[in-house]
Length: 135
Image (spheres, one colour):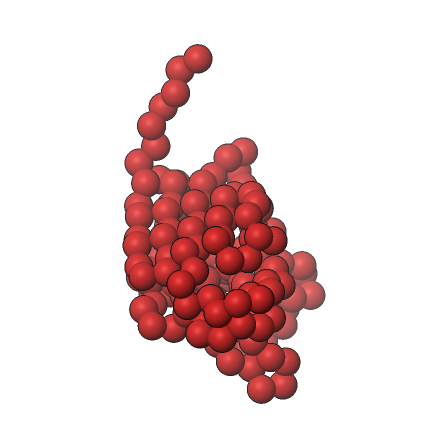
C-alpha cells in the first residue's frame, strides 16, 4: 500500500490546534463557540486565517460549536463542559476526500466532540436568508 503525504497548514494556540489538508483554504474557515439564546455570547476560536487567543470559554456550561467554510458549508454541535474548559486541548484536523470536507475533532474535556464529522451544505432556504442578511 502506497501512502502519499499531504501538505498541511497548521495553526497552534494555547487551547487549540488546527490543521488543514492542502486542498482546503484555511482563510475561508471560521470556528466558534456560542452560549445562550437571547443574550448570546460568542467565543471565536479561528477566524481571518488565525487562531483568536484568549477567547476560549472560561466557565462550565452548554455551548454550541459552529464551523463555517466559505459561507457554503457548516457543522454545528451542542457541547457540554461539566468542568471549567480553560485547560482544554481541542484539535481540528480538516481534510478533503471525494469532494467533501471532513474533520477529525479531539477534545480532552468534552467526549461528545471526539469524532469525525463532515461539513454539510446549507439548505436553499438558509442560503436565501444569508443572502438577505449580507445585503
